Length: 316
Image (cartoon, rainbow, N blue to C red):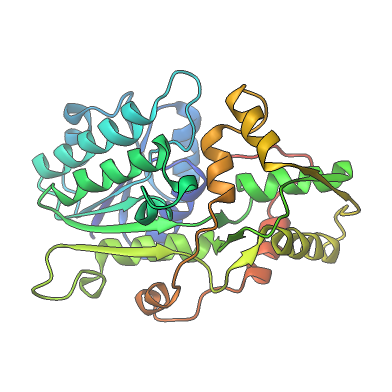
């Protein structure tokens, strides 16, 4: 039975990866830091491995016998003393060094969809995207086979975005920054998890012969939508499931959103950038990897609403 080690295994994407890998008969070591996280991994079908900090020494032992490592333990904003440098950059370097020391063959890494436009577009030129770019470089320089996914928003039961907007709908108002015309390309968490497991184990997932040991794929859904279209589609899914979705749109200017973020009110600056960066991708390589069409957005949203209890706050 092949062995897969997953950092961030108890998070939103991580627990779906654990379940998908278990269904494909992988032995899954879910790297966790707490007893609560360990219970989540166990429930998802994996074997929790306690690692208090992402150090090379601790991770080398955790990765022993693994055929592949999936690295999901990242942050999208700096909170509670965690920094992009420490988590996204140094944490990835520790994962890479540990994987190499443990004799792991392949690493699957989650980056960000805006990385390709760092230094080109203002909204993708920030410390968050720079940390993802530097982490990608660490993965590429590792000497391991590397599959890098650059995700848009990932939607599913209890994901942060859907949960937050559903709560706003239930309260009667949904916040919108600017005109709502900026685009996103949400992908179903089932597609994301299955793509990760396929990338971890399939010879076909690797790069073409003679092209080097690295491959990058946009982790995007089948079509791009504007923010306003996303809200309308989510509202339709909520109403179809008899959830409260009578609301008004409450608009904040882009300038006010940026000012509030700088002052520590509302979203973090990087969260505003990710929302407004208008990044989309080509879904066809992901469909080729999975060998099927991607789940339509409407179906993904119905699943997300059905699996998100009313009144929940967002989860990772």
